[in-house]
Picture 1 (tube, rainbow, N blue to C red):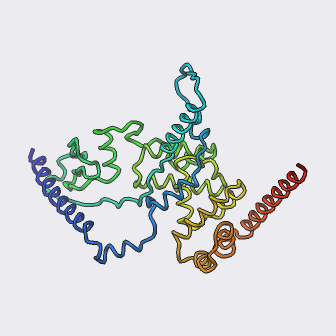
Picture 2: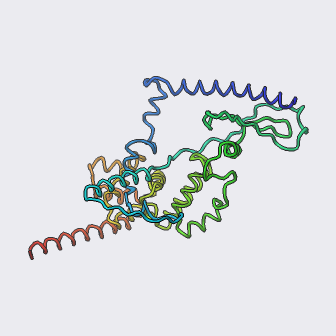
Length: 345
């Protein structure tokens, strides 16, 4: 009982300190627009959730309804047939497009959360009384999980804040989320991820990762980055196109200044507008790069934008120029064939 009373007093003091920290954080966030901190934030590079960035990523993701509504394994039910007029069919298609856009809503891309290593108190009088750790969790129902207080009493008498892994496990115990396991499944181990990648089940593993981990957790970021690296290395970009994960892939490659393979893939698939949008996103993220400067000087647009990039910042400039050449020759050939048909008619 004495140990519990000591822990309770320490937790109350820590709660009070946490409340003060939150109030101070709100005061900083609520500064007026003219203060230096906000000015510094105003010149920072674009963020993933910025409207302009989201518009570009949504546009190049694509909207392949057959891929979005592909069959999934589920209990078989008798099919339903409907007779529709042309007007009703158009309405059903529009409704399907809206549902598809909801399916393509991109998960957030966040920075990794900072490690928790705060020691609240050290009570040597409690050292050695127990051989196991005690975890104390605030289970107030309407409290956001990020503000929920979770502390651990070590056998040596140290009372500390719980680590992120401990917090995630305890929150899953008291507030279970459907599909999430208390202990992450072995599929997320590095050696097992390689097996999943070899089977080209990139969308499946990213969907499962989205359920199992928080978007700012180290495991979430690790799995996503390893998936993106494998896709880029083996040129499997199309397997994520028309999925909610394609925007994250493009964002990752653009931030890392490694869009060459993606551009070549888009050009070969006759997605020139998407390739131009990727270069524009690249220039937004790296406004100081050589291709961005030359683009501003030459006022380059469209395919010329990609040519400038291939001559300056591209790491595979010769391959990119070859892909552009083949694309332009194909366009010229199609134009000649159309002209011949018109003459014949």
